[in-house]
Length: 124
Image (cartoon, rainbow, N blue to C red; front, side, top):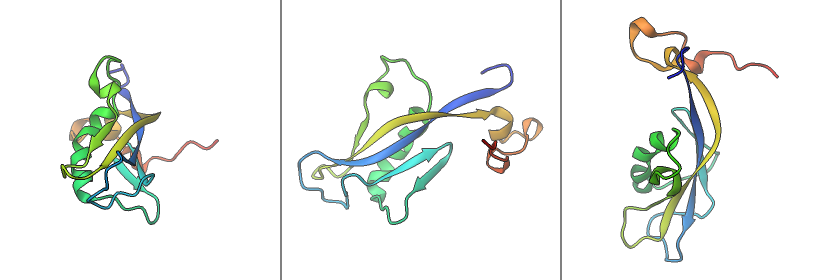
């Protein structure tokens, strides 16, 4: 961790892709959501199967962090729907990095500052 407690997380795009087999669950190729910090951001009308979402959720925090280029977390991008007969997958793509600090994100009372989501965005 940097001296000021700063760290970076990737924003992610999680997009439905099909592998050629007919999907069993509701998978519409191209539907997607973003991960920004701890938040899942869906466009109006986007729907993702809760079963596929349950399969991908545990991987998202690791995909947000820098990893070795040789780590599978850096190279493997698709997570299969947990139904073995389904052709749906979710592809995770790293986007831009977002800056956070420990004090903005910790639950430790003695180390807390204003939460990141309550801070003003810098104006450009």
